[in-house]
Amino acid sequence: MVNKKMSDQKMNSPVEKGELERSLSNRHLQLIAIGGAIGTGLFMGSGKTISLAGPSILFIYMIIGFMIFFVMRALGELLLSNLQYKSFIDFSSDLIGPWAGYFVGWTYWLCWITIGIADLSAIIYYLQFFNGGAAFSPGEGVMISIASIIFIMGLNLVTVKLFGELEFWFALIKIIAIIVLIAVGLWMVVIGFTSDSGQVASFSNLWKYDGLFPTGALGFLAGFQIAIFAFVGVELVGTTAAETKDPEKNLPKAVNSIPIRIIIFYVLALLVVMSVTPWNEIDPTISPFVNLFSQAGIAAAAIIMNLVVLSSVMSSMNSGVFSTSRMLFGLSREEQGPKVFGRLNSRAVPANALYFSALCLLCGAALQYFIPDTVKAFTLATTLSTIFFICVWLMIMWSYIVYYKTRPELHAKSIFKLPGGLLTCWVVIIFFIGIIYVLSLEADTFQALKISPIWFVILLIGYFCFYKKK
Image (cartoon, rainbow, N blue to C red; front, side, top):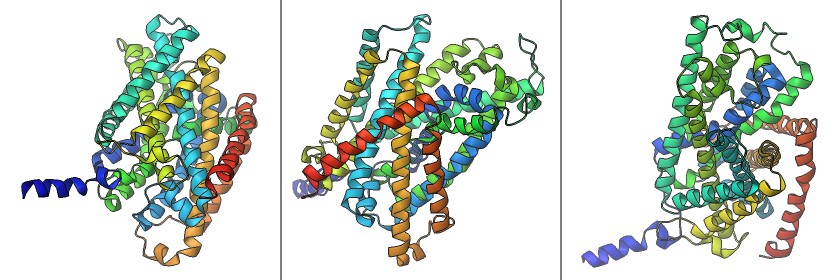
């Protein structure tokens, strides 16, 4: 009897049924959502963004943040309208057509591959601090990249619960660092801290140097180019929905808390940074977070912040490897990817999909040979990923428009509706199309924009030659 019961349990397990396991708790989902909202772009890119846009960067982050919030509300309503939907692939295929699921799945996979390549550049860049500030040789850069990929892949091969735990602690480190930064910065403003250059910390530094828009309209627009990358990955909550306990309760909680996170972790943090150090004195090549702690005279501030940033990058890579494997798993189940990616190991993890994504990241590590300038490599990879993420966000909004028009009964009974419905959809779509135009205004981002159509040609060939007949 006991053996029969154990056999029945085994047959009903997610692995035996070929399904992903719902082992992520609300605690995991909330911190994954926060971790997705605090990316490498905030720590590594905020200095350059401030130098381009000045204090107007605060408005840029708020505008982008609320647009992303509307994308997440649309995503949440779609996922909860049918709990058989596991990710964007499912509802895109169902609402728009099989080609849409194919496009979204493979493009989202590439999004995280390019972010992984950008993260490898960031890891090498920040490890230079512990190398006495000296740049690594291309060969050393490749070895660091390989070690990072193997480490993250090994962690993801265990269980999804371990992924959730790792993201929980990675996110917690980032949250504590930013809260401490805000507290230290506010303390410096209150006491009127004076820097070595004679600069007094004050909120008036926000408008004292040529106002809130010191670089004009072009500078304001240029700020969007880098700032938007800081938000990529926030939709990771959607890809974890298939492995989350009680999604009807936990998913809305995670999505609705996005605006307050943006205000605290982006707006308030950068407001404090620019109050302590005027925007025109912030070095775009140095993290303003490291600079603020150093000015405060906190011992080992640079070491602590560089470790925090490294943990942030590893968190991003961890999320990326997780996401890519789940996208390949979903594509395989929809017969839009190789069948081998749809197999789970004994721990309910799509191991073959993980191996393939890790192999692609290893190929990306070769970028260190061709572009030894880590900052240039980071800019190219982040711009490409931003373009592809915008395409995914636009497909989510398109899916919502089809859902709204063809499934009115589901929308009517939804308890988690997108505020504004269709009007909000069109506002978001126009906004992101405008961002793509903005990316063409600067030479370095325009270079990535010119390369991006190659991916869409590859997708077309793959779809019509291999999967359309299925």
